[in-house]
Length: 382
Ligand SMILES: *Cc1c(COP(=O)(O)O)cnc(C)c1O
Figure 1: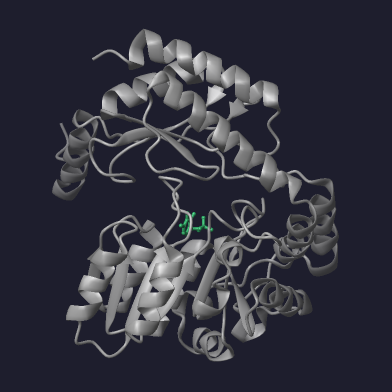
Figure 2: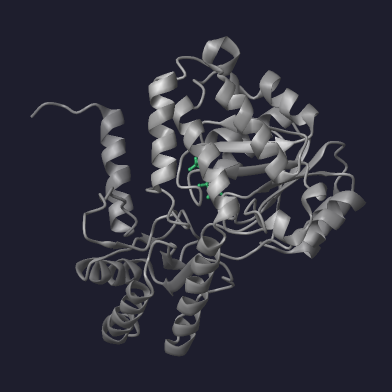
């Protein structure tokens, strides 16, 4: 027997441990013919014909790649024009495109270089990684709890304070108490960053997010969102005062040292924004589906936490049982994924349901009746 490298052996042990804990992850490809209830294509725009043709025309005009960072030679007119469109949509002085939400969050938080960051306990991994990269003191406040946030702000002796929160939370589908947070950021002289990844296109009269819906755009210093979810495209943005955008161009390493978002994608984003503003029925439909799912879960006794958006967690709790229920649903032709630690806390495993405006009423109804069967057979027990 050949002696295995010791390092590789530790990797194998690590993976065995993950399997024992019932936390092993595998990539599962989406199959044709499934009803997909785990996509973030909330508005059903990822196949929209107008967006597709903008993408194709963009590819013909500019080619596939940006071929370098914007600061080298990767910028095109369409980047700048789309940024102007985003800025006015978000009611901000300026905006800048990023290759992904992960790039945006890690890039901007580290570029801001705060002394101390006040971060909601359930913020997305890309926010957490941005906080780590910034080397700031990290103060975690309890999820959606302004009192907990104020307690930390009151104690803080830091000069440059940054509060960061999602607007709609990705795993729980609940909303941050943004008005209270804006009040606190003013009271304590902090900057506020809001991640609208799951609200973009879904909330607001023009679909620009929950901050628009709540009328608090002016209280947000760094507004982040993605085009990979509701917009049905790819990429992300930061909108804010011009000095924030200038800082990003000069200091955000994920922006500076990474090839710019491809022009055809930017063409698609630009069209998608027009459609998100114009076709508000898509958001109304998907939010209605969210409400219907919650109502049925309440009837059959499944906990949906504090969800009040298009994202509805069916919180089953136990990791293994959650994966079993998900597997039964997959067998019935529903593409659903069990979500467990470390994406959510241990013991709060769930099936995260995210309907889309592209689903029909019948498909949602069909899912609800089949889920009820599975729940009565296996989920309720044990
Ligand atoms: C998905 C997500 C991101 C990352 O966006 P990508 O474009 O997929 O990299 C950032 N923040 C939140 C809250 C998200 O849910």
